[in-house]
Length: 322
Image 1 (tube, rainbow, N blue to C red):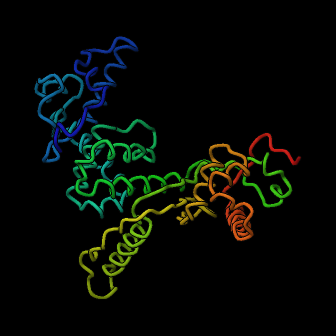
Image 2 (image 1 turned 90 degrees about the vertical axis):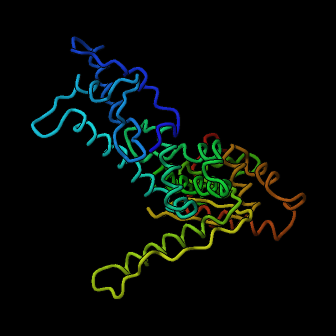
Image 3 (image 1 turned 180 degrees about the horizontal axis):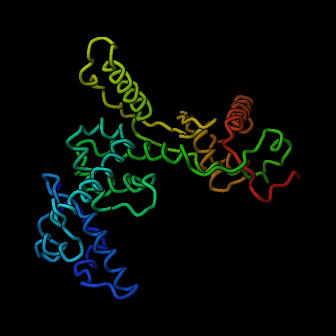
């Protein structure tokens, strides 16, 4: 792991001089910052703890001031266990959350990208669920890391983070068709569930992720005990084709789903999420004079019947039936 893969965490600069003794809350905080900095420091290219501390002193000398050795391990060796465990756990989480991105980039490049991201954006949450929440903006800001597949990698990172949001994001009590029926469309506003992500993408990453997961399942099954000949490595997959798609990533009955949307349906949902009334959202989303078309009226009814059954809408305050 390269030390210059990104900017180090801000806490490390404040932890260059851990206190020799703890006399109060201030000293305790300084000691905690020093320990966190030691554990969270990026590993070397050989996946070992860096031999030099933040200020250039030998790491072994610095950590010896606040970590005791034992009969088998020095202070540096004891630190290294936790330093490596911390980074390997974070990398495991990124691997688990981003199978599509890993398939797009390949194992070696994905590892470099993951390390660079974690150095620039270390974990700031009590839960590892949020670890990749800034990965897509990071890839967009550093396209050279994923070249020549930067655009595809950005789409994939957005799509895979949307799955995390959909899986356990917050939900509001869904509206039923009966609660919407009869409300004046010029006054009706509908909330769109916060766990639902609306994505306009330039690659068919939804199909690719399904293929990646199916391929992995087949590979695992083929290598199970007594399951026949070994499957070896999963077969290579063709990369997602380029083309504009619109996708809703959501959950239903505690299961994760992706749903392709028509461009007009996507625009309609986006306008509703922005707080537009149903009538205004239709004006924004549909072609001119489409509202008078019986074909479009039936299409809108079909969309809303399906979306309501999926529980995508919740009550927006202030709706009136007038």
